[in-house]
Length: 494
Ligand code: NDP
Image (cartoon, rainbow, N blue to C red; front, side):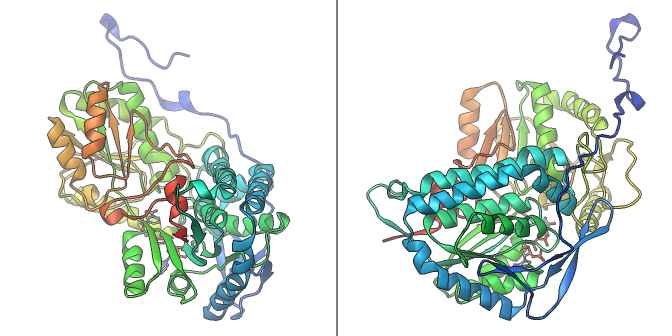
């Protein structure tokens, strides 16, 4: 059946929706091989927490419990640092080509178990299986492969200068890309010869602990990687530990600042990958159809739980009506629901707390006078869901234009000139990413020079590669992850 039809007189009528776009269910059925209980991973073994305490990990898609996760206290974090400290000397002295073999094995084992990991990631975090299968897991493997390649070529990381590892690094990661952030943190640290104590986020610890099984199967020497699970208090124990030579953190700007205060006055190195409020800028000469896809990907990928999400759309006035109407058509056909269904575009919000944050900020948008559009969509009865949402009539002072919502909510502003676009894009405390859509190469060059963002995508959005450094300006943090620059964050000059 045609998806559109000509109205009388030849004018194009609106798209026809309704059940035309319904698909049959297509559930992913691979077994995620979850355990009922996950212990801490210290010195190459799974060990019970000294407190004996565990917390529930639930599936945000249906609020059912998935597993018990160990709650690490100070004694456990101390034990993890002790194990990492013991392992460091021999790991650092292991020839780079041997370290590379371990990383290569980890990547290969992850590929072999890719489907199982994708299902586990989706059940634990709520993201659509399409994304965990096609993005998170392959990208995590790619990071291990990429750094396996570096491990025996470290003399070229900083030509003319010898590099050496830092020691034991403390790492804390968030819940939006649990396995991928783990790979971003572990792979460069290990390639360079460091040992690690890492804390995954409370709501998404499972794939980290499944990766620990792979570390065992790969024969990684005990203590090189130690995983301690728990909430923010455990995180603070990891970042504040005197055994850490460096702290690498990805998460909110608020917690990033707390960690910087905690480490002020120490000589510990830090990498901070914090929040963002990216401008996705569409000019009137942009390929509009392509730009609309980029806008959708920019804000609805991973339910908008993305630090570099294109959460502010800046659209050139001459094409604003056209872009907004195409966007509305496009989001009417996004499928929200069961993350394990292969047709789902927008899965579950990661936690009840995050859903409350999104609702709070959306309510502030309405209160402050922005106009909301949400397509009609049926949300599952159980679990945490939020429909794709657009706001027009947004001004720069609105909270929804300034604060990180971290949900499927787009704030749309307009501009008339290039200068105005640059000024509005940079009018934020953050500076992580930006997108530019235009036919003019010269304009792309000017925008990428003047936008204060660590990454500027041109005629695309949300492109990642292990060889490409990623990181922010201003309150989005400092330091880079990925590429040669990311490796140097884990090195000192010998
Ligand atoms: P957090 O920044 O609190 O979480 C990131 C990680 O830090 C988690 O592992 C967390 O543990 C841990 N942590 C929490 N407190 C401390 C502390 N004092 N010291 C050391 N580690 C700590 O993000 P939230 O999960 O609370 O999300 C809140 C908001 O942050 C979101 O609404 C979103 O706007 C933003 N956010 C941004 C991210 C980004 O990549 N830019 C990622 C995640 C969130 P645990 O989760 O177990 O409590």
